[in-house]
Length: 380
Image 1 (spheres, rainbow, N blue to C red):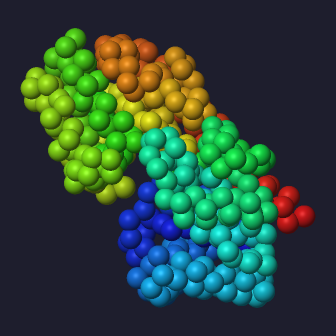
Image 2 (image 1 turned 90 degrees about the vertical axis):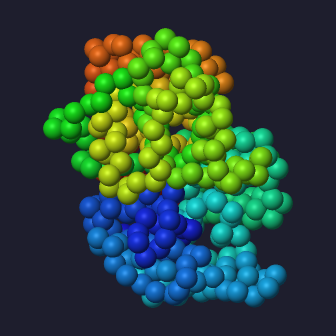
């Protein structure tokens, strides 16, 4: 089968920075290649129009059209022409589009269109309790209504999306995936005892302004605990601060701050080392669709304390392969961390159960087969 993905991001040096959407597309693309599919990724918002091959995936870079006030319209028409030409030439049979800012709005596409929810701007603004830009909400709703079929990475994301747009759409749930061979426990790397790891962007919506308060409570009971932070420092959209890290530093107690290490951004292929070295991983997020970072830590058999909001139950089974606690419940969150730091047997049990769930539900092979069956049913 011949499948195209339309996306604003893809993890490659030529295409620029990429977040969870790009990573999940690359993982799925590799899985579909293993199933004998031909995969093309169309990345818009690029500096130039170009093509290259990435491990068997054909990547086409699309430069946005620059016309004051009408860039959005003419860029969509440019993408529409590219996709329709590929379909007419029988280079693709179906295209999957992202929900972010509704890029497929006002496109008239000849081929079947699948939209997969990884969280629209409207969705995340709702979870963040922020006002969404009206044009983003307009395009996202129109794209949802025009898609031939709908997927979502979690039931919570599907239900919340229907609610915020006032729709009653039916979604098939197929989660994000990871390469379980790349994210596997390395016995040769020594674990740093009493070490707590957070990896991901330093941003309010991921609970980073709650984490200092949580760690302050950890330190009260466990003065030698260490917190390691890995990820890009992001400006805070609500306060206007240029640095979430600077905001965080003022929230740590003096005793806690002495035990914190912020490593900044690291190459994606080195994150496994940091996960391997950690004792416990924490994710106190307020806004996700289905976080790949959680799955990566689970695959590496790490005990996790994560937020208990919505999507979390699609990933972690509380008290089976991790703990789920609301990020604002600082004392309880810290208590769960300290329980895991002090109980090696529980950490091992949680870790083994976590990897087993990843193998069963979130591996590239499993998700690729589910996605391919979905595409085939749409074509038929």
